[in-house]
Length: 315
Image (cartoon, rainbow, N blue to C red; front, side):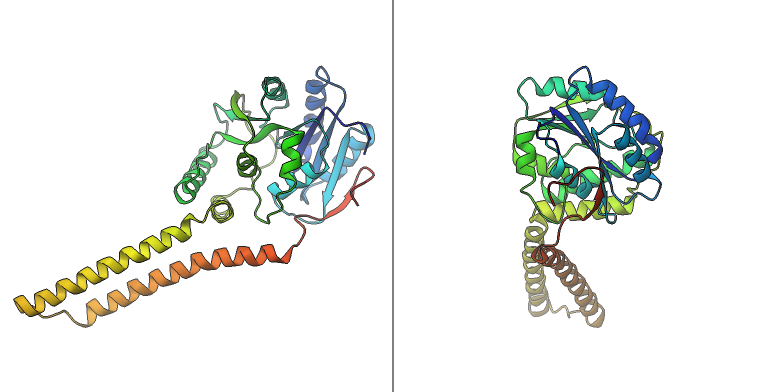
């Protein structure tokens, strides 16, 4: 990399949007040139199933400010973002999707707001141009995350943002296996503001986040950022114990005082299945946390770079 730090670095994970990359490049260059010509565009190919890497290589050959990183396999969006941030040396770093729903022209708004003294500026999609299913699944994800984790989120904000180099340097120190760009940035606690931006309809590719994947992402995020499920499990266990003792006391009173016999096999089997199901559920919650701890102890790399379009000084 050049010894001269770029003023702005743009990081974008690439998956399934090869056709969007030339237009993305042209619009980013057109947008950033009035601000500074000292910028770079870091495109992280997360083992995209199309010809994305070929397109990235062509753009890099035409303009050395385009830096391509090819991951050895699909590691997921947030690890791809992490890879890009690990290589981003800009004084300011923009994180955006490659499908052009995050419009490059809106970077100007983020940058100008950051110059007012903010370390973190996120774009808030005032009017989302997504399908009904995408908006519904996103709301469900954020709602589930809020209920179980106790942390506030906003479904109108995603990854489109600009952060200072200082924020990036601390983000790089967070090497947990469970990744989440926005939650990690929030945890760091730097001065942040959200501003309204224009959101575009999806013109290239399809979203890789199905409802199932969003639920899995919510569970991973909850386990990574909160131990509230464990506390809820304990509280529910005590609550069940209290009601069980109260019910047992009531049965004893009915039997000895009112002479009402205790119902037999049916009530016993229902109680056994209920308690057994709760125990298995609690064991499953505990197992999730133990599994995450196991993954952390392996100390495996968050991603593997197979090749780059530039000289990799980090090797």
